[in-house]
Image (cartoon, rainbow, N blue to C red; front, side, top):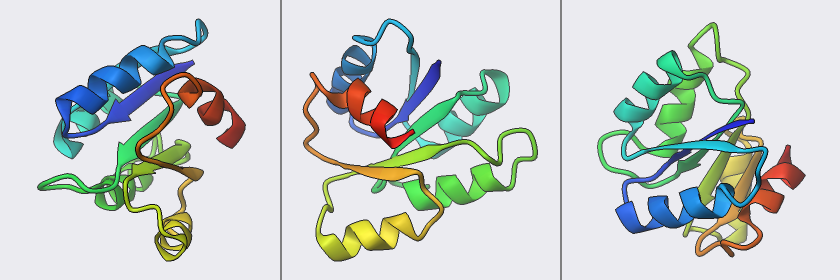
Length: 119
């Protein structure tokens, strides 16, 4: 399963990549921005994507909006990853056509399992 993780924080991207790679069925790529994610998606369509909510230039919800307009990948399951994990925030993210939300900081040992649960 192809998994794309998008986050502007290099340390979090590295931890997420290692955590997701613990699942031998996951082939993981990362992107540091929404624009980089769109380029990767065109060349390497993922089966699921995790988008950081708060990123400069193009945040996760805006990136999701771009993905939903791409014919070949419009139905991509997208999971938001966010430090804004208040109940009202979680509900707001859920209404944006996301598959789910994972709160930061996430547990690296269970991240891959959590992704599978949300799918």
